[in-house]
Length: 566
Image (cartoon, rainbow, N blue to C red; front, side, top):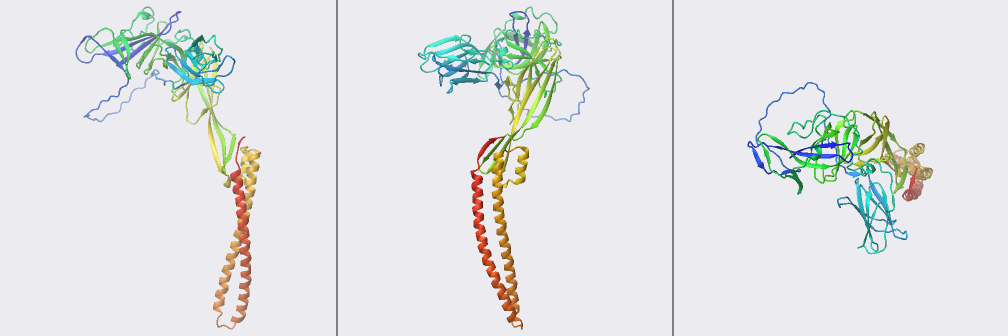
C-alpha cells in the first residue's frame, strides 16, 4: 500500500490543522476492476524477491549535465526521550510526607504513560512525559485515592491525601490542587495548551505546484483557489483497524478501477495537532533551516508512511515525506526551505585541568575533562517570530553541561528549542564534557613528576606532602640497595684476587722463591678473608635495614587513601 497526505492550515477561528489521507491504488492485473471490495494493509512484513537468472551487461558511464535541484525531502527520527518532566510531593492532612504512595499518569485516552512511587521525602518524578493534558491517580493504604485532571508535563503537581479507604476516590482539577507551574523549556509548555488549535501557526512561504496533484487528482493544487471551500467536507471512504502488527484500511463501498489505471481512495479525514517550526541541522548539508510541522498524531489511526502536501491559506506551501506514525506519536515533517532564516555554528574545545585526585591501593588517579562548546547562531529576517528546532548530535561518552536542555532526544540527535524574535539574532550554546582519567603507580612516581603535578596544579598540598614522604622513603631504600651493591662488588673483587693468588702459588712449586712468596701470599689471603667476613656481616645488616625500609614504604603506600577535589 502506498499513501499520500495533505495537511491544510487554516487561519480561520475554530479551524485547526486538518489531515487528509489517500491510498494510491494501481490496477496492474490486465483487466478492469468492477465493484471490487478492497482491503488496504499497511505495515512492514518481511518479504523479498530473488532472481533465478540475470543476464549481465557491460555498462557505459552516464555523465549528466549540471543542473540545479531543489532540496529533497528528508525524514526525521522518532522521539526516544522527551525533556518534559512531571514532579511533586504527596502529603497527609497534617502536612506530613506520604512514603511509598503509587503515582500513575494517564493520557486523554486512558493509557498509562508513567508510573512511580514517592520516596522517603514524599516526592515523585516522572521523566520523559509527552506533551498534552494528563490525569494523575495517587493511591496509598489508609488514604482515599486521589485523581487530578488537567495536569501538564513540565509542571510541579503536589497533592494532599485525605484519610479514608483506598476504594473511595477524590477527583479534583489541577487548578484546585496545590500546583506550582515552572517554566517549561522549548515546546513542552506551549504545544500542550494549544494542541490542535492552529493558533500558533505563523505565515509560511508559498511554494510551487504539487507533484501529487496529477496522480488521480484531488490531493493538492498549486493554485490559490479550490481548497478552502469544500476541503473540510470530504469524508473518508474507508474504515481503519489494527490487524496484528499491521494496519488495515477497508473501503466502505466497492471500488471500480479500469485496467492500467490508478485511483485515490480517501482513508483519513481528521483534525491533527501541529505546530509550525523551523529545523536546523548543520550536518544535513542544507544552506538554510527547513520549514517543518511538528505533528502529534491525534487522529487515533496509524498513518502509513508516504508523501505529504502542505496547504496554507488555500495556497500550496510545500511537500514532505514521513515514515509510519503510530497514534499519539510526535514527528517532525519538513516541507520547505525557510528563506527568512540564516544559521551558522562554531565549535571550541578546551582541556580542563585536573579536578579530582583519588589514591587507593597504590594507584593515583587524576580526573579531568575535555569540554566542547558549540554555538548556534540564528538570524530571523522575517516580521514574524520563529521557533527553531536545533538538532545537536548525541555522542557516546559526552555529558551535557550547559543550562540549555533538549526538548526531546532521538537515537542520534538532541533537539533544542530556540525562540527567534522578528529581525533579531538568537544564540544557543550547547556545552558538553568528556571525562578523562590518568593513572599513576605510586611506586614509579618520580620527583620530577611531582614537581610537574605541582606546576600544573593537578595535586593539592596534602597530596604533595604525601608523595614527598613516599619519595623520601624510596630514596632511603635506594641508598641501602646501593650500599649492598657496593659490598657485593668489593666481595667479587676479593674473590678474583684470591683466585689470582692461588694460581701464583701453584706456579711457585719447586722454585727458589717459593718459600718467601708463599708466606707473602698466605698473609694476603688471611687479610682478604677477614675483609670478606666483615663485608658479609655488613651486607647482612644492610639487607635487614633495606627490608625494614621496604616494608615501611609498602605500608606507607598501601595505607595512603584519599579522595580530594582540586
